Length: 265
Image 1 (cartoon, rainbow, N blue to C red):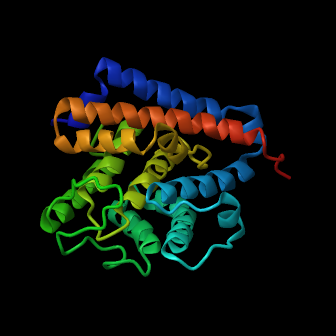
Image 2 (tube, helix red, strand yellow):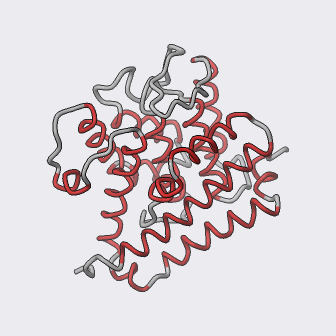
């Protein structure tokens, strides 16, 4: 049976970047400082990940305000609060991702889309979407539901591709297909850490892949996703490489943040 994700992941240039990304996460997991501050690092990673994720959506708020839960009641503030609430659901979603993937995705979207357009946790019925990054890659509603459902077999063992490659594809599919009326990008970026957690790459959620995407910047992120959406080999492999580099950068960012945290009690 064909396994196109595994085949692309095995290309020499892509495989090298995937290996480098996985190595960066492994180094974080064995970092003595991080291991002594694991509980604090997991909490900080979730907070900073949610902050970076919301900021990509245009909802950039002061980190201290998000940390304290003191944000203005505005579209920006509400998006940041909902994103942080979604990140609190990631451990539970990761537990069921490889057995009930659609349930996990619905759980994340339902939390982040409360009071937002559309039905929380359900694929959209209309072709129009909220597209804050102006990707302009959304597919018609019927095709979007089918593409979302196609992630199920991949997440339940339908590919031999490395975990970082699978995480990249799941992230990109949700980001470019935009299966929900709104919030698809927020869910997509959260799915990288959810997949890595579910597959045991980063079981405690220490890494900060969203920080890696932020360091790469919106233009490169959007360009890479549009390349993936094109469906050609260069575009898809370009996204796999970009995603792997973001994961590596996010692992390094987490290691640096661990140095600033107090030891766990």
